[in-house]
Amino acid sequence: MEYRRHVILAKSAAAHTAYELVLALQQRMVDAQQGVARGAGQPDTFHETAWLRDDGRHGGGTRRSIGDTEVFDRASVNVSQVHYDDEPAKRLSSATALSTIIHPRNPHAPSVHIHVSWTEMRDGTGYWRIMADLNPAIRDTELARAAKQRFLDALRAAAPAVFDEAARQGDLYFHIPALDRHRGVAHFYLEQYATADHAADLALARRVAEAAIDTHAAIVAEALRVVPDAAARAAQLAYHTLYLFQVLTLDRGTTSGLLVHDQNDVGILGSLPSHIDRELLASWRARVPAPVDQLVGDLLAALPQGGRVLVDDASKQALAVAVRGFYRAHPEALELQARGYVTPPTVANHR
Image 1 (cartoon, rainbow, N blue to C red):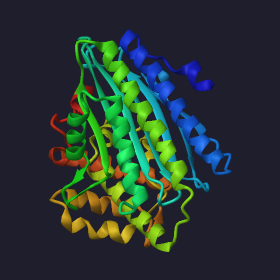
Image 2 (image 1 turned 90 degrees about the vertical axis):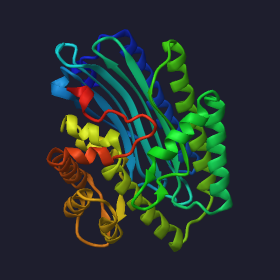
Image 3 (image 1 turned 60 degrees about the vertical axis):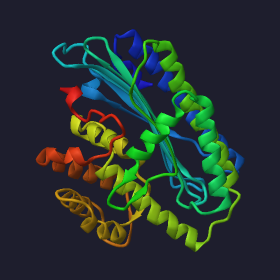
Image 4 (image 1 turned 45 degrees about the vertical axis):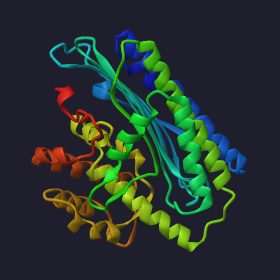
């Protein structure tokens, strides 16, 4: 691929093994989801898009995505590695990440978000960020309750020693104070995780991600057998609106990516669903604290007019500009973003 001819990867051995891991997980996710589609009689194929950081001098990434099919509303499986091997004054040496979101078309099939990243500092220290969360639009059915338990059981089996801590941190991170609810129903989140055994930490990241990938695919394959009605479609639109609201007003990873550079805005916002209810989003503006109410207004201005509106690439670009502009003008608002027990770095480690 042309991308690989131009990108320069990080020199660190730890960053190299992390990059191998996230590439393998990207392929596993794509294979699993394409398998679900084939099982449903839809031979959907993910398409790859590459981007370069500073023309490849500082790395880049690949996005494998699909949308607007019978099986997928939106799906994006992103891998990136950014480094500053040629800029020793920077505190950050490299950041290697998998960030993926699958939004199935069928409202009874839950969305999933998985993030695995290795951040390495100039002094050689580093840490993992490991996240996996199940995000159903419909929560009050027997199928949804069974899916939640199945997902949690898989994560507990993959990481028994840290599961309780990760679940508690996930519940904190994915809580939406303005709406007094969570984005999803099952959350796993380790922030700045590192022990003295780097190989064991790498294995933990692999197990958690593989468990989430495989379990979610099995859940979706089963859920696709349910035929949705108009009420289910309406519930999904409302949930997709909630998802966009949480990502763009609370998620530190998204904000960090948008503030650090503007060379992959559409990829960073690949987690957004295809449509949202603009009027519902507008109704939440009065429920957030100042100055975040201004951010919600900026998001509304970046979206098309109407009720059910399309979130296409042009909208994502406009939303990215709105988020970046808001936090540059109001850096104090970063303190209002999501956190677990440990406040994750948003921009500081990139300076």
